[in-house]
Image (cartoon, rainbow, N blue to C red):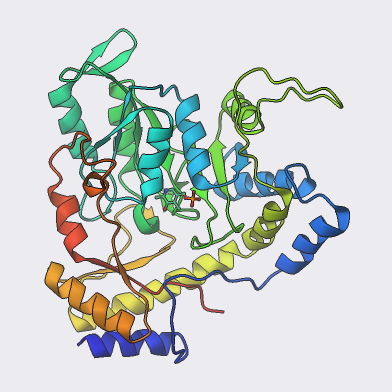
Length: 379
Ligand SMILES: *Cc1c(COP(=O)(O)O)cnc(C)c1O
């Protein structure tokens, strides 16, 4: 059976010997735009490509504003900080995520609290979130407080796993009820819609990533997206060392960050963004081919959830149990087809082991079964 799967995947990718999990696709104006930045000498944090990349990304998502950053983790750090998260606050998130989500929370000095995901969306469960808050939160002046620890619960960071939107409207409603800031980690979900709206725009702020393994890349890069003009202004200021614009004077009015995306990287991003609609069409076609194959093979393939239109960033199958998962990982990786398990759950990593956890039944169940399979856009 595993031989059949590996053969099917190899065939999809034209018989290639070694098939990566996700490689970037540069088939547009990448070289031209990157050369421009060298020709004009604007390779660093000032330049027209950064502004254009922000405008074009905002337009693509349907956001009013976008602020480009050096990576998605930095975008998330600043989004949390500007949403009011401070040292010793608690931030609710899911354990099934890339470590950047928990790290960005830590950078603010806050403590992550892990709440379970839903099995169908792979993202934060609105029901489990509501259950946790009902059992643990009290609303006081200044917001929601954890009655066991006494700490303020300042924010919630759901993540759209592998590009599949979670129940973000329900999560937003729970957060509103408890006056908790919602910061969407849409790092994996550019191009994914929920009920017709782009992910990352269901609250004041969301973030995107343009790391090398995402659908489109700037080499390294990220974006804060928001409809709030004041938030965008603050985000740009604090990510550019909080320098007050002036022709020659260096005056900074707070401790800022050197988080601005260089023009060189933005040039690559502009070229990539021009191809995103085409990439999304190909990703969805690939997912449809996988869905049909795995239906025939009797193996569950992760489909876009109800009300969602997914970018299918990383395709995933669910094997019977941890032993079967490990067997398949060994077989496929030994045969040139790169596959990988889901990330080790955050609450099992040594730096987050002592964090509070709600019941994590679904996350544990999924961790045992998820295998990501090659998902690159075919050239
Ligand atoms: C990629 C990613 C990020 C951001 O990562 P960077 O490499 O810093 O751009 C954040 N969260 C999730 C879930 C991601 O997959």
